[in-house]
Image (cartoon, rainbow, N blue to C red; front, top):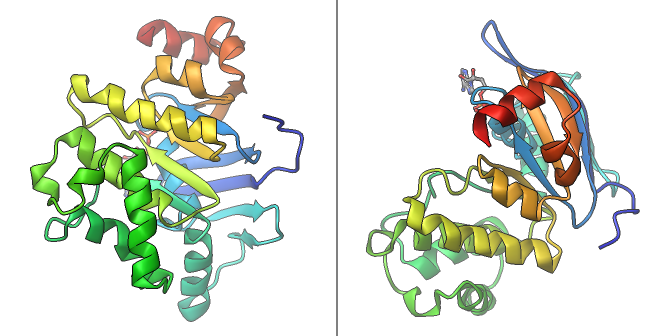
Length: 256
Ligand code: ADP
C-alpha cells in the first residue's frame, strides 16, 4: 500500500496532566491512510492516554489534532459547555476504540451489541444495521453467535465482537488499547489474526500493544514511548533490530 498521501491524522504537541502528574509531554505523530501504527513502551508511559485523547475520552491540555479533511481541534484554546461537548463528539466520530476488556453490554445479545452504535448514535435504519452486523460477524467467524449473550462467549470471541462493534461504526480510524492483554494466552492468536486481516484490508489502525512479535509483523510504523514522550519511531525492521536510542534498546532488551 502506498503511504505517500497526506496524513489522515496529524497530532502535534499533545500534552496532558492528571493533577500534578505530567503524562503526555508534547507528543507529535501522524498516521497515513491505511497505515498500521503500533505504540509500544513501558507501562505508564502514556500510550493509552494518547488513544483516549484521540477518541475524546480525555481532553488534552494542549495540542492540535487535525484530520486531512480539515477537521481540527486546538486544545490549547479551552472551551466549555456545549462547545466542548460538540468538540468531543466530533472527535469521537472519527475513530472507534477497542478496549483491553471489551465493554459489551451484558444484557444485550451479540447482534444487539453491534447494532447499538449504528442505530442509536448514527441513526442508521435498524434493518440496514442488522444486515451489516451479520456481514461483519460472519467475517470474524461469529455468524452463529448473533443471538448469544456475552457471558456465553469465550474471551477471544467477546473481543472479536468488540472489534465488529467498532467496525460497524465505519470510523476513519480504529484504535486498539492492548486488545489481547486481558486474554488467556491460547485466545490471543484468534484476535491478532482478525487485526492482521483488518490491516490487510487497508483499515487505518493505531494499536497499543505488548505483542512485539505482532507489531513486527503488522506495523508499518512502531512508535516507542517512554515518560510521556515519543523516544523513537520507525519501521519495525529498523526499530526492533537496530534501535537508535538507548532507552529503546534497554526496553527491547528487557522484553525480547
Ligand atoms: P500506558 O498506556 O503507557 O501504560 P497510560 O496512558 O495508561 O500509560 O498512563 C500514563 C500515566 O497516567 C500513568 O502514570 C497513569 O497512572 C496515569 N493516569 C492515566 N489515567 C489517569 C487518570 N484518569 N487519572 C490519574 N492518572 C492517570
